[in-house]
Image 1 (spheres, rainbow, N blue to C red):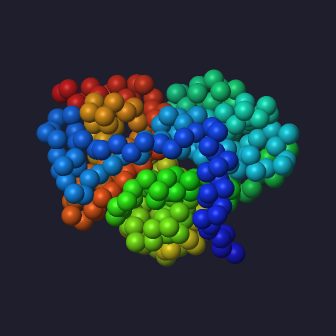
Image 2 (image 1 turned 60 degrees about the horizontal axis):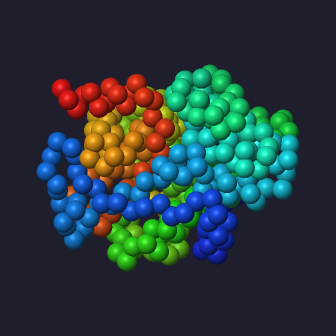
Length: 327
């Protein structure tokens, strides 16, 4: 299998220009600690921890960067668009379908949070709900090739990588000092995009991939020296991908300095603290990077950014997590 070439700086800058009319750079905010603790070293230290919330873009996550870029570059979208998604890619595709005036169809697991399914429908998208194992069979067996739509692969479409790489470009241009970046990993599209920008412009920056303990696909693949399939059980549905693709695995040595695993309890604490102290409503996958970074001493991580990837959390789950904080 030929390795897919990484996005170049020129491509990233072109993508940033393409995306500029629909979204601006997301903010960088200081992490203030938890609602049940004093303000910590994250604020006053020479090595702060910064949050980059991607919650307020169209579709409610970072996904619009890559999906819009890929759709805009496609010349065959008139028959409609198609993807596979746990929810956030589907929302981004639905927004793009509305923007370009075409149908947007997303194959989704029937266990996807109701919040995400309803959000896709509200944007005019068409959720096609199937058992979870059928979602991954659709990808493995390339079943989209029998459909008439322009298919946007959420993990290995190079134009998606380029679009996601604009987030890394923003980090390079927005911070004079940057020692490490914490990136949640599901299918790996965000990781490849952000890491490509950092390796091109700030190669000294340490790139930390973050997974939940309940779905350590990249972690196990690195242990085995090859992609392996694992069992997934986590509230981080946005990254609940049970294997790393060959395409992403072929690049991970070049792009990743370390993989960190985060417990479900740490994710829940991060969701709670981001809501109560920072006024950010964040889903499980969106809280992963913050949960990992806060557990590493400032002297080890240096000036750091934790990417907060999305905010589509089920209301009942959020309520249960906030209630835990009161007991």
